[in-house]
Image (cartoon, rainbow, N blue to C red; front, side):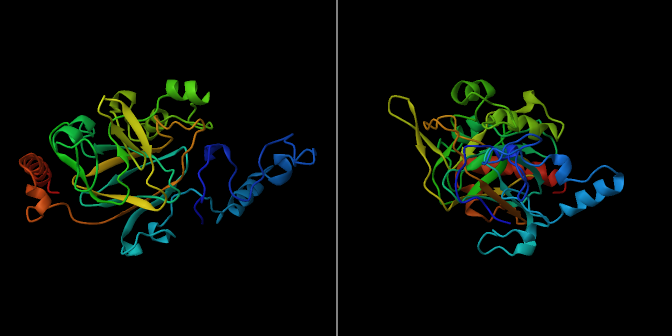
Length: 316
């Protein structure tokens, strides 16, 4: 199993699995000859042959995939025991993923190429009406730029997660993700399985798997592609800090995590440029009263008290 070394402008949904030819009946090879018909490649004219053909695909690996079991990940974060992993995945350029995580889980995103841009939504996994509020996430800490020790807050005044590590420093809580209309204007296509899917379209697909709809999707934040506010109020895209950076979160509540790895809406490059993102999670311990972060500021102390009160009442 490998990870892409270069960013791509084509969503992998349109690419064949590793080791399989592209195109269907009538597709042309470089010599101009018609490639083999699907029926010639896969013998599925009986139940038994269909079963044998399906089983023959077993063991094939793609460049972008979840690793099952998680400890099979070839990219386990430094210092983490692979046996402790509860989630391991390389998310494709133009791809999405989702997961429910226990309180105290540590969640890490890695950008291997310098072009990843995972857009993130967080929900209270027990009551999904409580969700990430990017306005409060900027306002309550008196800091608009997300970085280490920054709380990611819900609209109910609780800490959903906190940033515990950051080697990038290039993140964005201003712009949200892309919409279909935006991508259609810029790239000419916004289909979820097309060459330039929008973040909102992918979030909607992920949300639907958990009984959520379009109305449940708030503004998101994104990692690895920075945005700054100039003195005149203009938003300026700063791009990536380069390949090999990471950001790590700690889940302070049970979380539903949605990720859409798509090009940033302010990226000035004409093509749909986004690289793969690696995601790993492992068991840990939520922030407690003895942690300096718990009482770092009056506002953060109150948010943590609200969080602990909620979790303890549910035996978490």
